[in-house]
Length: 416
Image (cartoon, rainbow, N blue to C red; front, side):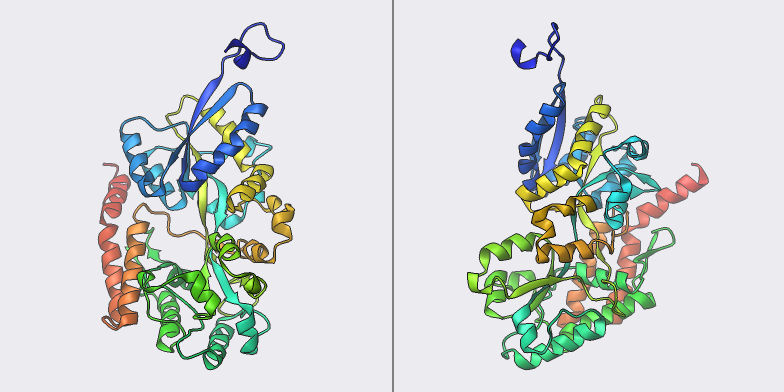
């Protein structure tokens, strides 16, 4: 034991600080592969990783905060950061970032870095990035006369209409699962919509910008370009994509690996990825900023040591190494020089898309509001609500969800 923890050249055995880190889901398992290299570089530190399933992570974080049992550093989903900040669970990181030579704010994709900013302060450093773009069957698009992906909303509709004419009657140009809220929000962002108004106190879904985007989204179903299916009604995504049951879909980077594994060899050169079309064309349309960040727990007695661990994981070298074992996309531009990313056309579409991403509203209540967007969008597509009824209901329900937020903000303003 003395030999294992002795410091080189020292007669006295060194004291090793043990850092507790909570990693979520598969990332919490895979990050253990990076620990030996960190401990080799920092012989005075030891990292103990606890893996937590995503399904249990939110409740566990809140329970641990209430019981004073949080670790030193945590992986945190982007939509949870505002809630943890409101609780006082995280340490602000701006001073550490400014003093760091390893963590350079200008090397992160701007929209991904913005996910960790709440109230003008940075509370989490991006670990890996996530966003959504277009996956499509290049061979089917070419059969319809399109040798490249659409770049504008008008081209998007035109290309899908052309596909509608050449595909079998049972097939569709695009698959848009009705239980997903992401695409209506993406389209709204592309129209410049603000989903909440008055300091995120009220819903803003009846605004002209959101209404225009919502109508464009509904048009996919109204014109028979997308099937009216929820996620439970979809059989096997990869088999259906291979069979040509649909020619395109909007999804994230996890499907890069899935399509490479699940599609037959003869189809591997027949699918492609592309940034989302924008309303007017030109640059890629806005997509969602996603992924996960790394935060320091405010109550940790080892905050300086925890920052060294975060600096290590956030370095371009380790982000590229983590991509190699996980498939997660690096949040730093310089990490994309790695040959596994630089030489992959499928990945490079994500590189282009990440230059134009935007985070969802930074309120703890956002996930509850997002589920209502999907619910009302599905109701309109299935004909049980009109678009006007759905948008008015969304504003009304968002206002109800945000009632406590308004009460807290009034108390802060009045100094009570």
